[in-house]
Image 1 (tube, rainbow, N blue to C red):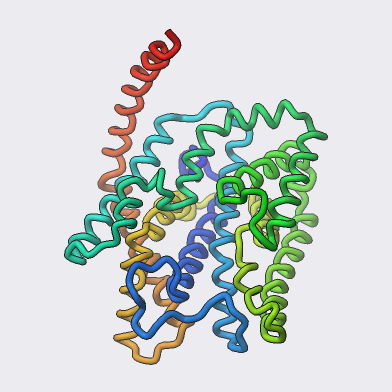
Image 2 (cartoon, rainbow, N blue to C red):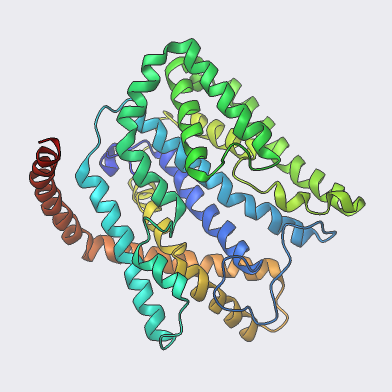
Length: 377
């Protein structure tokens, strides 16, 4: 997610979008906590039903918040792919640093959960914490760690296709996963496949549709269409669900990563904000923490134990508190805590972990060729 540039060199328009996406993903995941998803302890007073038809404007707004996480994932995938699209190499040191950060926070929160709960922690959560990369403790980070070293090969393969065959591939994949896949998981869908499809699309647009990328008018139209479709699909799903039992589950099913409208909004905003000459060290610094925010706030122990504990605390301190202020206060608390931890890590520990990753990279570069030579012989 970090494009490798120094903070002062980054395009603050893109960085602003990433900072907003970081807030929206925390908001979306905190809404999921109130809806009782991915919890390892119960919510006192029960979960608020989500993804279902409702006549409450407040609960309908919470359903819209859940799309925030989908929108944010799209922003991060588009921004990452845009900067990887022309790259021919990958930096092993960077890859290992992200992996070590992933492990570090996973093990720290595992230790905290064990300590605070006196060892009463889910065994499956412990296993995910011990091996967060392979056990998909955070799908986005795990997928990034797979895509990043593969992207030079993907770029070369896509380049060899030429424009017409690349277009055919992009259209077919988009139709399969954002067309038919919008209604139901098809064609062995998973989030890694989704990223690969978006990678194919973004690389095509960057290489062959530069006029669209640079056109304020075209992207403003795309943005309006995406927002209209996004809100329209929420209202339509809710209306259908309220008026027919046949569509009662539609609102929840359409809150998915394969919904094309958040993708359109994300890409249009990316193009509208990119290259506008905005430079802000503060925005660039905050955006530079986005991967840490993702790793920390969506850690399995944080989402499973600490976030529901915070909801229970809010309900205890403010009896009768409504769902909307609960989500907003929870988001504020989680974002504040996450930022504090991320800033403290950046200032106190990161340089040591980067040095460790550098030493391990040099060691791996010496040992790996020897292993390959033995296998070949």
